[in-house]
Structure formats: structure tokens, C-alpha cells
Image 1: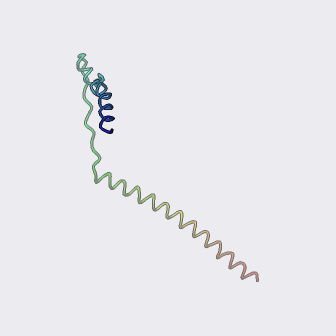
Image 2: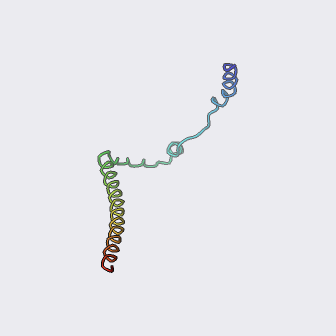
Image 3: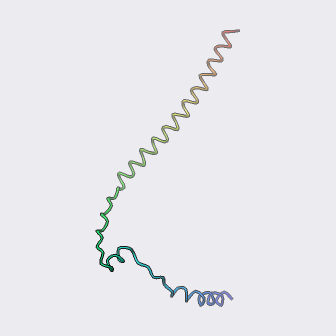
Length: 92
């Protein structure tokens, strides 16, 4: 049963596989029409070391900022509790 279905699908897909769209790049089209276009300059690769260092420093900075924000919030909360406790003990 499965072999018959796959053959049917293959027979239906064959004309679509053989049909190929026509397309060309703008550089080839310009070359064919006689217009000379200078090729793009080669891109300078960033490199693994430079990219890795940039990612490391970016991640470290983001993590450090998150830890700093958390530590400041905890410091404020504990300082308020301590101040409140001292104020209650002095007023009693």
C-alpha cells in the first residue's frame, strides 16, 4: 500500500522537479548587457578571538549589572529592617 502511494506521489512530483525557474544575479545580468560594475570589496572577518572576547565582556558586564542591582536592593531592604529595629528598641 505504501509503495503504491509513494509511486503516485513521485509521478505527480516529477513534472515539478523538472520545471526550473529562470533567474540570474544582477552581476551576471550587467555583465551580459555590457555594463561593468566593480565587484564588492571582500569583507574583513571579525575572527573567533575578537568575537569571543567581545561576547565574553558583554556577557560579563550584563551579569555584573544584574548582580549589582540585586545586591543594592538587598542592601536597602536589610538596612531598612535594621533601622526600623533600632528605632523600635530606642523608643521602648
